[in-house]
Length: 170
Image 1 (cartoon, rainbow, N blue to C red):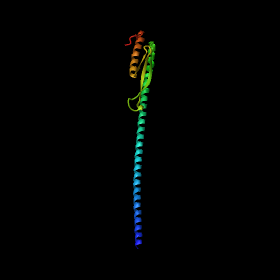
Image 2: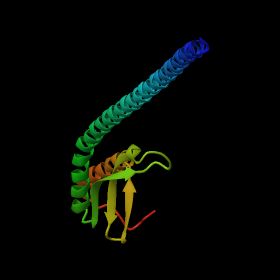
Image 3: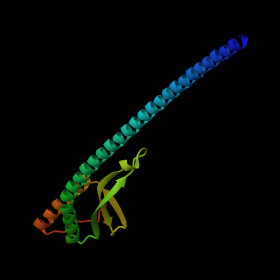
Image 4: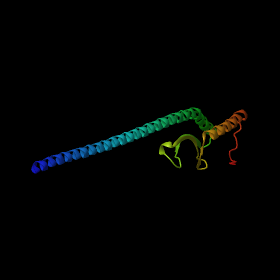
């Protein structure tokens, strides 16, 4: 009977050990599920952040494209306004037998700091004075002002027939 009692105790102990093992396994499984769910949530958050960054980059690129388009339109308008004046200035200089050439040029200005894509293109006029061996670079407004002065001199020349005196360089 004692042997049966010991056998019964051993069976109860084994069953209890099995229940403990099952509880430990269930606990480990629950912990693993929590860890996996946490990792999945972290991946979802990271994916959402990457998508947000991608959308922000796209928005900035679209904004840059719109700025470039506006800049190109403004440059085209400047060219349409200035190119006829460049031709006129060259013709007046030739009429006065001056060895001066006017040319339009497009230059880029880089920002001191920041994105290289933020460079700005500007339109300028190069005045090549071959008589005195130097050149100027004028902005369009200054050039327009100078063409008006050249027109006035030319009109005065046409009316009077007298060639202007270009010896005074001041």
